[in-house]
Image 1 (cartoon, rainbow, N blue to C red):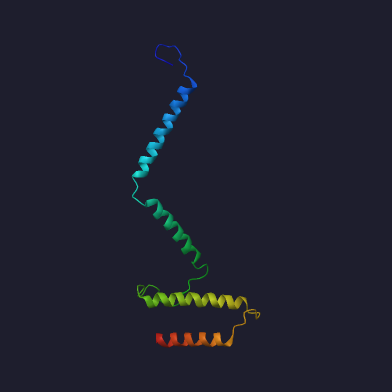
Image 2: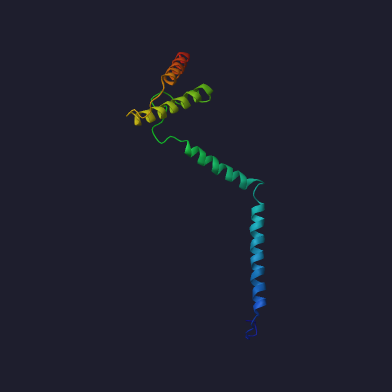
Length: 128
């Protein structure tokens, strides 16, 4: 409608051109807003999402593996403590697995048992 009160009709080509122009303007605004993000931001976000999924896959569903071992934060930056926590978690997972298969399905060779016992003994002696 124009200011004189008469109606004007647009051809389909004019209408199409009008909406195409609006679409292009929206795309330009979207592209400009993406340019405001730091370089590599999208790839970094994808990498962080993958890492979060990986950490979730390795998280413990049961009780804290070092529960009852005293203060957990004392010397938390020491690599030996981190190794001890990993070993504790692994041993608890092993115990759960063997307990679940206590019907004799998990027959372990005597050589493997002896090697495991020796490794645990050495670790216990090294901690004292």
